[in-house]
Length: 262
Image (tube, rainbow, N blue to C red; front, side):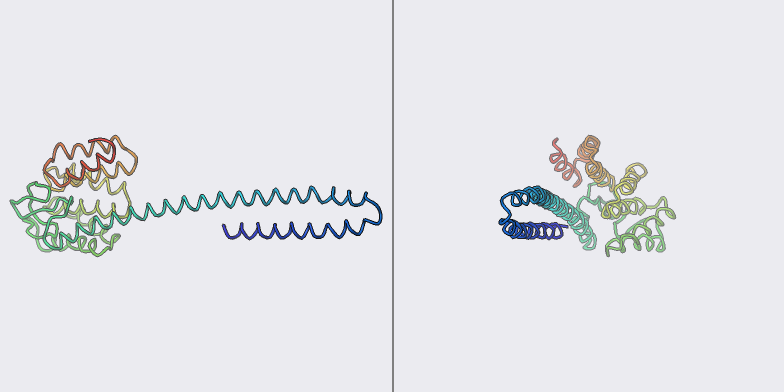
C-alpha cells in the first residue's frame, strides 16, 4: 500500500510537470493574436493545476498517516511476539526441571508419597506420573501420553490426551496433574477461557492438591490479561495469603506490584 501511494504521488507530480510544459507553447503561439488568448490559457489551466496540487497534498498526507499506522502495528506485533516468547520460555523452563526430576517453578510439582511438592503442599506423586500410589500401569501410561505430547510441543494432541484422561480417570492421584497441565496447554495456545476453566477445576475439585497455588496464580494472570484487574488482584492476593510459602506466592507478589498493589 505504501509503495502504491508513493508511485501514484510520483506519477501525479510528473503529470503536473507535463501539464505545465504543455501550457507554455500554447501561450507562446497565441502571442501574435494579443494578450487575451494568453489570459484565457492561464485561466483555463490554473484551476486544473491547483486541483492537481491539492490531490498531491492529500496523497502525501495519506502516505504519512499510513506510515504512522504501519509503525504502530509493527510495535504491537513486536510486543505480542515478546509475550509469546515469554510464555514458551516459562513453560520450557518448567518442563526442563520436570525432565531432570525437579519441581517445576510455579508449576507446583509433586514429590513422592508423603513428601512435599514445589509449593510446599502434601503430595502423592510426581508430574511425570511416577510414584502415583493408586494407578495401574495403563492409567499411568495414559497420563504420560498427554504429558509427553506437551513436552514435545504437540499441543493439540496433548489437549486431546489430557481431556480423555480426566474423562476416563476422574479421581486418581494423577487427575489433578492432568487438569493442571491441560490448563497450561490451553494457556500456551492463548485459549484463555478454556485454560481458566481447567485451572478452576483444580482449585474447586482438588482443594488438597499441590497444584492449587499454581492454578490460582495462573487464574490471576488470565484475569489480568483479560483486563479484569480487580479480580486478578483478589486472586493473586489469595495466593499470597493462603499459600505464603509457595513459589507461586512469590510470583503473585511480583504480579501484584506490576498491577499497582502489594
